[in-house]
Length: 226
Image (cartoon, rainbow, N blue to C red; front, side, top):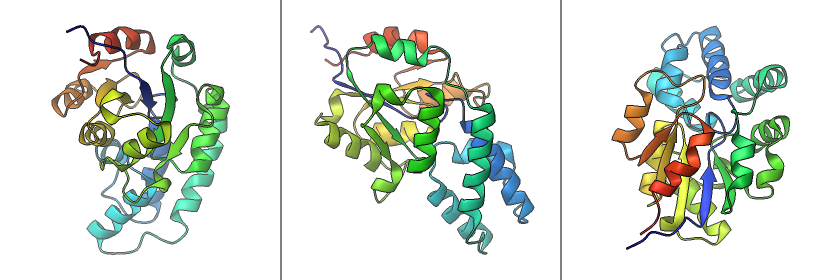
């Protein structure tokens, strides 16, 4: 049977639309180290917490260390990330141009807090491609790797999960999308993606992996819904 195109493209933001994952992870690692949490260097933040909400990062660090991280951690990190985003944030090459040519409905489903998500999309010039269909993990009980955020986005957009294609860069995000019953294409074009990351995403359920936005339409065409 000939497949049909997907109804909805759901994009993660950090590391997919904008090259921000490494910026945020760097600041998280620096702030944790400053507070005496030495078991969470940048490499650890990228391998374990890419795509995970700040709320869940804090809960995990406190559980594993057995001590509080500090009530001001999230606010301190948010201020530092905002400053570095203004100075360094860039959209991933050809993201806007590629998305503009794709006829499907589009939305963003991100682990970022709404303020950080809005800033990233505004600074990168990508917000008009998605607004008002921008969803944050704060809108659901469980963030990635749980499927809640993607299912929430599909419901809000009026589309069935099996008709959705998710673009994700993180293990947590791919895991969440697979659990939601959606097709996932991995994206490894961000500066944080180390050698072997594409294989990791494939192993956990990505049907294809691309390293540049120009390659996405072909990958989606090959993964058409039956």
